[in-house]
Length: 242
Ligand code: SF4
Image (cartoon, rainbow, N blue to C red; front, top):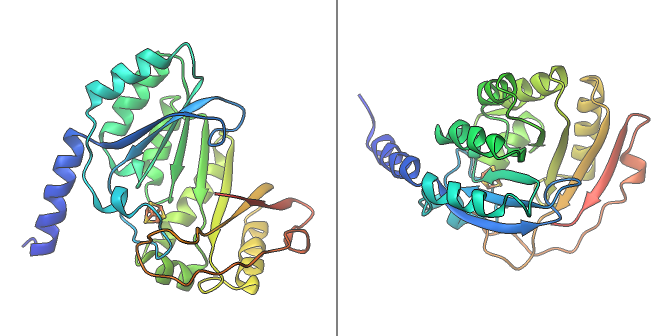
């Protein structure tokens, strides 16, 4: 028997399927390495990260249809080289594959921003050559992950990480840092975890955003991490401003 709250979430998802996109950022030079791109913000998410500064996207409904998105991409294909599928969590939407095929036919490069809960979708996109770059969120080690995301999804993050390690798709790992949620020791443990998994490359730390509405009220803090002592021979920790 389906619980009452599950019925409500299914209804929201059905609406999102009809109009999966909450909004579109028509131009960015910051969100896709090396390419001028647009961002498709998919409505809905299966996490509730305490520091999330997109509550309207996570909790809201999509407003833009597949057809409208297609028109937008057509109109921009001579100006842009990349499309960022973001959200919310874009991999939850069945329309993602359809939109990615559309974007590929228009010769866009495709980047997916993901919380790592749908490794099966990443695999399918890779198998169809629909994936050019991935940004994978690393929320924290298992207990912190559960607390920060209000979800029990660390295992799927691990699966996505393992999959990306095996697939020949460039990817980056990133963590949003709020000192009330993750200590410097936590970050060190996370770097060690990545090192044990054989990860090599950049690991981005993003500061949480002060002074904006978040899913859960958090203190405004001005704290800074020195990334140098956190880096290892194979993992370069870098600070990225949001
Ligand atoms: S920060 Fe968390 S809740 Fe917000 S969109 Fe990303 S995964 Fe979802």
